[in-house]
Image (cartoon, rainbow, N blue to C red; front, top):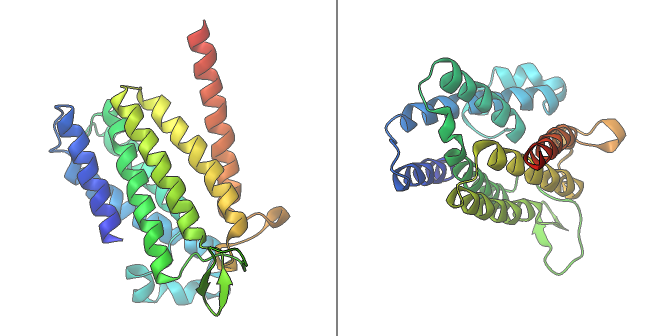
Length: 228
């Protein structure tokens, strides 16, 4: 977890300095995003994955300081903090938002590799040549599926930054591609604790569908606007 956040921070600082932008406000921003994302990931876990043990989790210090996260919860809470910090409090230039995306994506990718080594967020039973033995059976290395996809998305976001694409272009493409990746990968997840509900879709798949269509509509609007 620490390595993932460290990569996100230092990559973002590198991009800002490479483009001759002030990286001094980044530390406070990252600290705020870290705290709110941590809380958001925990809150979503309590909401969708704790079942009838919610009060036991709340009272357990190990839960708040250790495992038990939902990425989308962290993303949503982190974005809310970012919008307040940048747009309302004016403490970070909102026009520099695009420089934050590659760090987010690569940090997330490293985090998924960490999930693989700790054995959480594991996959369903699998008899393919690349199956891994975990939890007493051969299963899909689903954490690595997502990690490889995220590394590819991260590479694309770096290219877009270098091509001087605008904030909306980079953010919407990231959300569009990641939501599709996450929706597909979730079919290979075997940890039912994450919450599986409507038409056997997980919580993350439902959120992914919303993000996908909102991002797609935004991309289509951008394309039509440029056409005029």
